[in-house]
Image (cartoon, rainbow, N blue to C red; front, side, top):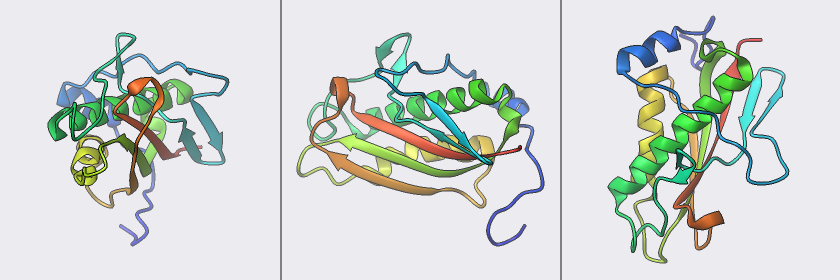
Length: 163
Protein backbone atom coordinates (compact mmCIF):
# COMPACT_ATOMS: atom_id res chain seq x y z
CA UNK A 1 0.00 0.00 0.00
CA UNK A 2 1.39 3.48 -0.82
CA UNK A 3 2.75 5.52 2.08
CA UNK A 4 -0.08 8.06 1.84
CA UNK A 5 -2.69 5.37 2.48
CA UNK A 6 -4.42 5.53 -0.91
CA UNK A 7 -6.48 2.47 -1.76
CA UNK A 8 -7.68 1.25 -5.11
CA UNK A 9 -11.37 1.00 -4.32
CA UNK A 10 -13.90 0.78 -1.58
CA UNK A 11 -13.98 -2.13 0.82
CA UNK A 12 -16.81 -4.40 1.70
CA UNK A 13 -17.73 -2.36 4.75
CA UNK A 14 -21.37 -3.46 4.83
CA UNK A 15 -20.14 -7.04 5.21
CA UNK A 16 -17.67 -5.92 7.89
CA UNK A 17 -20.44 -4.16 9.83
CA UNK A 18 -22.58 -7.30 9.63
CA UNK A 19 -19.68 -9.50 10.78
CA UNK A 20 -19.13 -7.19 13.76
CA UNK A 21 -22.85 -7.20 14.59
CA UNK A 22 -23.04 -3.43 14.10
CA UNK A 23 -26.22 -1.92 12.75
CA UNK A 24 -26.03 1.70 11.65
CA UNK A 25 -28.46 3.97 13.49
CA UNK A 26 -30.75 6.44 11.77
CA UNK A 27 -28.75 9.37 10.44
CA UNK A 28 -28.69 12.48 12.62
CA UNK A 29 -30.88 15.48 11.96
CA UNK A 30 -29.55 19.04 12.23
CA UNK A 31 -30.26 21.03 15.37
CA UNK A 32 -30.10 24.28 13.38
CA UNK A 33 -29.82 25.80 9.93
CA UNK A 34 -27.14 23.57 8.36
CA UNK A 35 -26.76 20.20 6.63
CA UNK A 36 -25.23 17.11 8.21
CA UNK A 37 -22.98 16.28 5.22
CA UNK A 38 -21.30 18.13 2.40
CA UNK A 39 -19.49 16.57 -0.55
CA UNK A 40 -16.58 18.34 -2.23
CA UNK A 41 -14.94 16.24 -4.95
CA UNK A 42 -14.16 12.93 -3.26
CA UNK A 43 -14.24 14.33 0.27
CA UNK A 44 -17.37 14.00 2.40
CA UNK A 45 -17.47 16.26 5.46
CA UNK A 46 -19.86 15.76 8.36
CA UNK A 47 -21.14 18.48 10.63
CA UNK A 48 -20.60 18.21 14.35
CA UNK A 49 -22.50 15.12 15.45
CA UNK A 50 -23.81 14.47 18.95
CA UNK A 51 -24.21 11.04 20.61
CA UNK A 52 -27.99 10.72 20.25
CA UNK A 53 -29.80 7.39 20.72
CA UNK A 54 -33.53 7.27 19.95
CA UNK A 55 -33.78 11.06 19.99
CA UNK A 56 -32.03 11.51 23.35
CA UNK A 57 -28.42 12.13 24.28
CA UNK A 58 -26.69 8.95 25.42
CA UNK A 59 -25.13 10.98 28.26
CA UNK A 60 -25.14 14.58 29.37
CA UNK A 61 -22.58 16.36 31.46
CA UNK A 62 -18.92 17.08 31.83
CA UNK A 63 -16.06 14.60 31.59
CA UNK A 64 -14.02 14.70 34.75
CA UNK A 65 -16.95 15.44 37.05
CA UNK A 66 -20.24 13.99 35.77
CA UNK A 67 -18.93 11.29 33.42
CA UNK A 68 -16.16 8.70 33.42
CA UNK A 69 -13.66 8.10 30.63
CA UNK A 70 -15.54 4.89 29.80
CA UNK A 71 -18.83 6.77 29.42
CA UNK A 72 -17.02 9.28 27.22
CA UNK A 73 -15.71 6.44 25.07
CA UNK A 74 -19.25 5.10 24.68
CA UNK A 75 -20.45 8.56 23.66
CA UNK A 76 -17.59 8.89 21.16
CA UNK A 77 -18.40 5.49 19.66
CA UNK A 78 -22.07 6.45 19.43
CA UNK A 79 -21.27 9.73 17.67
CA UNK A 80 -18.89 7.92 15.29
CA UNK A 81 -21.69 5.51 14.35
CA UNK A 82 -23.98 8.49 13.75
CA UNK A 83 -21.31 10.08 11.52
CA UNK A 84 -21.01 6.84 9.56
CA UNK A 85 -24.81 6.69 9.29
CA UNK A 86 -24.87 10.27 7.96
CA UNK A 87 -22.22 9.42 5.37
CA UNK A 88 -23.92 6.19 4.34
CA UNK A 89 -27.30 7.91 4.05
CA UNK A 90 -25.87 10.71 1.91
CA UNK A 91 -23.94 8.32 -0.35
CA UNK A 92 -26.66 5.67 -0.51
CA UNK A 93 -24.15 2.91 0.30
CA UNK A 94 -21.56 2.58 3.07
CA UNK A 95 -19.29 0.78 0.57
CA UNK A 96 -18.80 4.06 -1.30
CA UNK A 97 -16.57 5.15 1.58
CA UNK A 98 -12.94 4.54 0.74
CA UNK A 99 -11.39 5.65 4.01
CA UNK A 100 -11.74 7.76 7.14
CA UNK A 101 -9.32 10.66 6.69
CA UNK A 102 -9.83 12.78 9.80
CA UNK A 103 -11.84 12.70 13.01
CA UNK A 104 -12.38 15.74 15.23
CA UNK A 105 -13.67 15.37 18.78
CA UNK A 106 -14.51 18.25 21.10
CA UNK A 107 -15.15 17.24 24.71
CA UNK A 108 -16.94 19.12 27.47
CA UNK A 109 -14.52 18.73 30.36
CA UNK A 110 -13.44 20.06 33.70
CA UNK A 111 -10.43 22.34 33.82
CA UNK A 112 -8.22 19.52 35.12
CA UNK A 113 -9.36 16.69 32.81
CA UNK A 114 -6.44 15.28 30.78
CA UNK A 115 -7.71 12.02 29.24
CA UNK A 116 -8.99 13.51 25.99
CA UNK A 117 -7.16 10.99 23.79
CA UNK A 118 -8.56 8.01 25.72
CA UNK A 119 -12.12 9.28 25.25
CA UNK A 120 -11.63 9.93 21.52
CA UNK A 121 -10.29 6.40 21.14
CA UNK A 122 -13.92 5.27 21.47
CA UNK A 123 -14.48 6.69 17.98
CA UNK A 124 -11.07 5.83 16.54
CA UNK A 125 -11.25 2.22 17.72
CA UNK A 126 -14.66 1.80 16.08
CA UNK A 127 -13.41 3.20 12.77
CA UNK A 128 -10.35 0.90 12.96
CA UNK A 129 -12.63 -2.11 13.50
CA UNK A 130 -14.64 -1.24 10.41
CA UNK A 131 -12.08 0.27 8.03
CA UNK A 132 -8.87 -1.36 9.29
CA UNK A 133 -6.06 -0.05 11.44
CA UNK A 134 -3.72 0.85 8.60
CA UNK A 135 -3.15 3.51 7.49
CA UNK A 136 -5.48 5.03 10.07
CA UNK A 137 -6.85 8.56 10.24
CA UNK A 138 -5.68 11.89 11.59
CA UNK A 139 -7.40 13.30 14.62
CA UNK A 140 -7.85 16.51 16.56
CA UNK A 141 -9.19 16.30 20.12
CA UNK A 142 -9.94 19.42 22.15
CA UNK A 143 -11.64 20.31 25.40
CA UNK A 144 -14.27 22.98 25.94
CA UNK A 145 -16.12 24.26 28.96
CA UNK A 146 -19.53 24.41 27.26
CA UNK A 147 -21.16 22.47 24.42
CA UNK A 148 -24.71 22.54 23.00
CA UNK A 149 -27.48 20.86 25.02
CA UNK A 150 -24.96 19.68 27.66
CA UNK A 151 -23.61 17.02 25.31
CA UNK A 152 -20.32 15.57 26.54
CA UNK A 153 -18.86 15.65 23.04
CA UNK A 154 -19.23 16.71 19.44
CA UNK A 155 -17.61 14.66 16.67
CA UNK A 156 -16.98 15.49 13.03
CA UNK A 157 -15.35 13.41 10.33
CA UNK A 158 -13.96 13.65 6.84
CA UNK A 159 -14.33 10.59 4.62
CA UNK A 160 -12.73 9.90 1.25
CA UNK A 161 -15.38 8.45 -1.03
CA UNK A 162 -15.52 6.67 -4.34
CA UNK A 163 -16.78 9.11 -6.95
